[in-house]
Image (cartoon, rainbow, N blue to C red; front, side, top):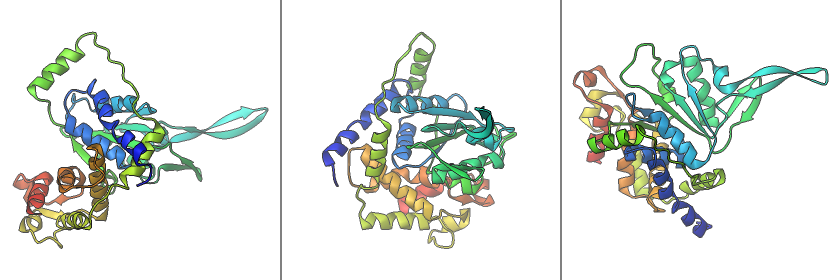
Length: 322
């Protein structure tokens, strides 16, 4: 591993990034860790939580702590692809009229796709090329998105009227599916104290764009043994009813995770190792990230739903068996 000293200095700044975010966001440490893991792994994440859990504030705070450009897109039923990608407008210069592409809010380092399930599939799909290819195409011309490029989408799990559930193909594009829980009693008391007075906490940018890109490159250099790769492969394959040796998978699942899930789990395990100052993956990295990596890549059948079985429960059983 080249430039080891530089890498160690960058990794040593990761706790400072979490500390900056913690100045604004009370609790939710597991969710914050998972968001940062998705960033380091070079992927995107879906945040799910009931209203009032500071999903939007968390993303905005992350962008400020990273000192990067930030755009928020409020997804609504009438939102069109051009509203997020951009459109061409006619401009006149020295008597000549030409069409110029006006970049939309998608052209930012950190993009918050707020309530993504409130817009129709046509607009949802406009994110697909951006999420996968880090570019957009308009009128036959390709425009590169800024790097690093990080999409965080949110959705509300309790209000489904007027929503458009994300198709499986788009769900699979999200590296992690992160669920936010209610704060503890003490954390909620701290939220009340911090947000109902005159408290105003300025944030310091911890990383530059280039440093984040360096960390993303470093993430792929973190070592993982062949034995742990086999463990990841076995775990992912065990979610598929046709391949699994577990009766509960055959009983509760219609289909399981594809190869992209294994790639996501390896990259996220490497990112978690980096977050903890290690340059090698350990088994705990894999088990800790199995749920956010796999929960949106497993389709449960009617029998599982009738019995109150969740994807998380299936994953727990598989991790325990492995």
